[in-house]
Every structure is written in C-alpha cells, then in structure tokens.
Image (cartoon, rainbow, N blue to C red; front, side, top):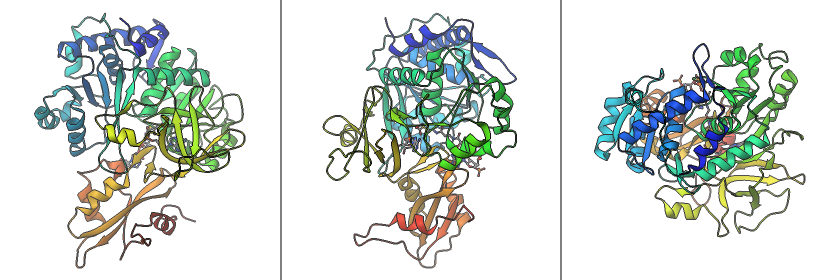
Length: 504
Ligand code: MLC
Ligand code: AMP
C-alpha cells in the first residue's frame, strides 16, 4: 500500500539524525518521531477512526503535537488544526461543520469541548503542551510499526479553515498531492538539505508553520528547533546554531528591535524567509543593513500553499514576492472582464498548479465561484507582474485585514459588534500598525442615547472572538462615509485613521 505524502517523508527520514530539538529539552530523532507517530496512528485506529475521517486538533505547540500530524497522515485521517486562540463559540462552528470523529484538545478544555463535540458524535481526547494527556496514554501501549493507510495524491490530507468575506469560515481541502508537490518544490527552490537547522517559531495550525516549515524540513531530512512561540531573545540565543528562519513580517520587525541582532549573531545563517503578510521595504532594507542578509519574501495562501518566491540565487527585490514557483502558473487578469493583462498592469492574481486545493469542504457553489472556467483559482489579491517577471501584490480585492500574519475578516467582527445593544452600525478596517503590520480597528455608530464606550464593546467581544480578531481600538463616529450606492467607503476610513497607531 502506498501513502502518497508519508512515503516521501519516510524516504527522506534519516534514522538517528535529529529531527526536533526542544530548547533545553529532548532531541527527537527521525526514528523517535516515526515510532511515536506509529503508536499514535495505532491509537487513533483503535478509537475507530478510519481513512477520510476528520481529526480536529486544538492543542499547544509541542513535539508530540507535530508528531500527531504525522500520525494522522499515516492513518489516512484528515488533519484539521485549529488556532488555540479560538473561543468555544468559534470551535462549535468548526466541529459542527467538519464533523470530526475525534477532537484533541488540552486537558483543561476537555469538559467544555465535550459539551459541544458530544452532540456531533465526536470523541474527545487530550494532549497537553508537555506531551502528556489521554491520547499519549492510549498510544503508549500500542505498537510503533503501524501499517500506513493507502492514500493517493488526490486523497485529503488536511482541512484548514479560512474565513470568508461573506458568511462563515470555509474549510480548504488540501490533498496529499497538494502538500507533497509544494513542499518538494520549496525544498529544492530554497536549497534546503539535511544539513539545515530551522528555527520553528510559528504556530502549527496554519499553512506557514505546518506545511511550509514542517513539510519542507521533513522532506529534506533536516532538523528544527521547535519553539513554543515567537520569542526574539530565544531566537537570538539559538541563531548561532541555526541556518534557516521562516517568519511573518512581525518576526523581523521585532528582531530588529534587539541590539543583539548583528552580523556576528547570524554568521551561520543561510536564509531568512518571510511571508503571510507584506514585508515593508524598509524592514527588508534595515535587516540587510544590520545582518548582511536579504530576506527572501514569498507569497502563499491557505488554499494554494506557496505560489511565488523571490529567488535563492538571483536578486531578492523588496516589495515583490518574486517569481511563480516551478510548476505554478500565475496570471493577472482584469477583474471586470477576466481577460489576461500584460506585464506592469494591475489586476486580479489568479493561480493554477498542483499546489491549488481541491475545493471548500461541502461548499461546491463557493468552490465553483472562486475558480475561472479554465481552472485558475481567483486569489482575491490585486497585483501585477513586472517586466522582469517579479510578482507584486499591490492590494486586496477582498475585504481582509492581516495582523501579525493572521487573517481577520471585517465582516465577522462587524457582525459581532452590530449585535450589541446600542450599536447602529460599524465598519472594521485595518490601518498601519508598527508591530502587527495592520491593526484591527472598529468605527462604531451608536443608536441615539446608547451608553456604550470602548471598554464595554471590547468586553462584550472577549468571549465571542479570538483575541487577535478583537479590535485594538474602537472609534465612535456620528455616521459612516458612503458612496452613491450606499456602500461604506472603507478606503476613506482607512485614510482618515491612517496615523492611529503610527506617530508621525
Ligand atoms: C497576538 N495578538 C495579536 C496577534 N497575535 N493581535 C493581533 N494580531 C496578531 N497576530 C494579541 C495577543 O493575544 C495579545 O493580546 C496582544 O496581541 C499582544 O500579544 P503578543 O505577546 O505581542 O503576541 P505574540 O504571542 O508575541 O504573537 C504575535 C505573533 C503571532 C506575530 C508572534 O501573532 C504569530 O505567531 N503570528 C503568526 C501567524 C501565522 O502563522 N500566520 C501564517 C498564516 S498562513 P493581549 O492584549 O491579551 O495581551 C498564511 C499563508 C502564507 O497566511 O502565505 O503563509
Ligand atoms: P491565508 O488565507 O491566511 O492563507 O492568507 C493568505 C493571504 O495572505 C494572501 O491572499 C495574501 O493576501 C496574504 N499574503 C501571503 N503572503 C504574502 C506576502 N508575501 N505579501 C503580501 N501578502 C501576502
């Protein structure tokens, strides 16, 4: 039997070579990870989970959590990672929509999650940040030599939820073929080898930390320092031993704030990679000046994995996301007519290739609406391809805020604010923020005589929205600017509040 993605991971795994290094703790070899992933896969199988069943996972970052992802691949289950910041209300939606057979959460959350997972028929097991929990209790006595489920390139490996400009979150279905093709391409494009040591400081529940960082490391037989979260001091302590860092722009902004970042500290580093949000040209320039390294910026999406990358050997141009990756076709079209545009003209970025997902979970109409008739995925990003072939992202055709690499859909936040007693309407925008790139900001119009202030609104949102989605500031206004069609002019608001977080 063959398992499309895991067979490739197994083939690249180099026995007793290190895979995961925990700072001040254990080093897991590839053999250790294979053994534990086999035990967990056996435990999952014993719970009655069959290929195609969803396994939802909302746990803190740990070596065991990463190995659980491998176990799901081996068992043929569809891995469904969830942001640890999601509230119970948000979790309820994902469990109802994806209908996982198994939900794995921290021990502290077990009882509350049971109340929402139980009615959907899901089993709840636990995994804590220190690797303890009921899942590993079950795995302990299982054999490590699990026979991997048969999975073809077209079988689902994972579902990652991504919010939408309208309605609720959509589950992007990613196949074994999507993940393997993209990770293989990136490994080769970025020259990642078994000699590389990656600093892994990203969360494990998004494309960047899960597929880009983890799958590329695995397919190179490389190793990683697995950090529980981003901590500039910890990174700067480890950096003399590392060769590779992948991060969102906020990582680089914060690293630059440390006087410890200099050429000597990064003497052994081979490559710094940035993505998930725009890297300011000034951050790129400042980093180069301080360290001698040109950060390599690349562009991706949950639905498509990685699409473009600045070159490894050629010039890495600040403010661009580089060239389409080998095997990936990127074009720019006129949003009104769909006609392909020539170089230098701005339009909708569309993508086609083996990296592009299979569709949204149980949403065939939404899936159809986001593909062109000739099979290109409509990204929602506005951009151009310059005469030298570099792709530039110049804006977004979708109403989306990206804060510290996390996406926030204003509609979802507005929906929660508008429900509050005393609110007439609201508009949520992103404006420049020195740390997070964009800061989520709500402009609120109250009903006459409403007694609402900033803290009352923020307090009400606390239980309903993950922390990173909550506005950093609430601004009260008499009314919202509208165009002749009655549509709120968010561009006017963005201009009006452009200096809110940035002192000029
Ligand atoms: C945390 N907070 C955030 C936030 N992260 N608020 C807005 N935006 C964020 N991204 C909240 C915290 O809850 C806290 O709230 C306050 O802001 C300050 O927290 P912090 O200690 O400064 O945050 P920290 O834990 O250091 O996290 C910041 C971060 C983290 C940038 C390190 O957000 C992060 O790891 N981001 C990476 C996201 C990512 O992996 N994206 C990839 C998506 S995949 P308070 O007030 O309670 O203290 C994708 C495709 C692709 O996009 O191309 O890769
Ligand atoms: P997500 O839906 O979380 O996967 O986020 C994908 C979105 O992040 C893309 O559609 C882009 O808008 C944005 N993005 C990712 N990488 C970059 C980048 N390097 N520069 C600008 N935007 C980016």
